[in-house]
Length: 364
Ligand SMILES: [Fe+2]
Image (cartoon, rainbow, N blue to C red; front, side, top):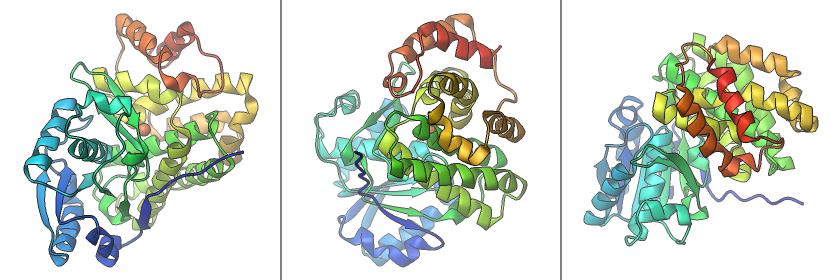
């Protein structure tokens, strides 16, 4: 038995905003645009959204203060702007951080008695309509019910709610053409982690596995080419497609142990999310290969062996320039990870000692 639910209307391809902006029309009269300082402008996505809003005679207000790994105070600030301005819907433009922030803000505006902490309890059932426009190809947030935020104490964690699914997303690969080599790599590797982690998850289904396989294949065949030809739209299109598919995978399965291992490394040591996650894949997968080898079928369908997969990760350079972790941090990170829900959906047994070992093996 399996089920499949993804209510987001997806538009994918060149000029999708210009050709389909009428789908915004029914969402309300005034939009809160949630974004960071740069990517929405540099990519051309903001210009396309503003031109669509003008044609539809909509009003808008821009909240452009979202930073990487958005903290609770920024979410509260966005909520205040939205409430003061009486907005009817929210548009997130950017990478995972602005998109995740926009989803959280849309719930908080619709439930103004809630605090950011309370988003994690799931005690709400409405949000303002959400539109997402990704300017990277990694997070998949444009097609998921997740939002990952960072507390003021530095704890990065996601919450999940069906009201978090965007109503509409516009994925135009040309918005990723100006991404640097480093961001192209770290975001594509995040998407790869989503597809691989989704395929090993105990929640994987026949449908999610089909999408995971295609996503892994697209990244295998296009990432290196894209890194060598940053302005090639065909490679960009394939990475955007891979990221969307991987997002649709984790919308069904959630992520597994590597994501949980990576969160603290990102917050405390500044290692970018995609890299901080994927560096753990080979050793987690080796343990699964021993205990539950069938769970590697999707990955091996594309890469043939775990060794080939590890070589690919080495070739694209994700293990370069990693920081040294302090021993006390490894202990505290491991104690957090062992309690995370990700452990339960990872198909092998991991004790807190195994988790410490996973940190030590990568950061020795
Ligand atoms: Fe991720």
